[in-house]
Image (tube, rainbow, N blue to C red):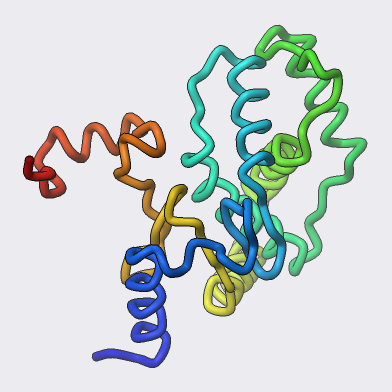
Length: 195
């Protein structure tokens, strides 16, 4: 059975898939979540900083679903009274550097996106300590936010499926494919392009 929400999500998915929702109202945006724009340069700076600090190979496109999830979880946590201060983020980050788990950024400061990802790590640690009624409240808050979420994604970075889940793009010439995309294509989980 189709609900109005499912029809709206499917329609939005087609608009994004056709490239008509390319953040045209927000030039240079990778995505806009609930009115907050994340620029292509924000994602590029964050992925470059992450890779320099960890030796990883994080791509800008893989940050889109991560950030959508991070922001939604953090907002739901705030709804039930769980917050993490900037000072707590700084202390945790300093401990990671001190333990040798990551390198301090050459720029000296974390990018705003990296700061939010680290904040979310701490929020998720706190969520792991919730009792049953608190977990139920968190689940309800998260579901409420997902229902009302307004997300506009530049198709160079991701698209959405019928359930509203963000999907990494399959444009090898535009955005480097991630390992999961590569595995999906090579394991027969998606149609292969015809030459």
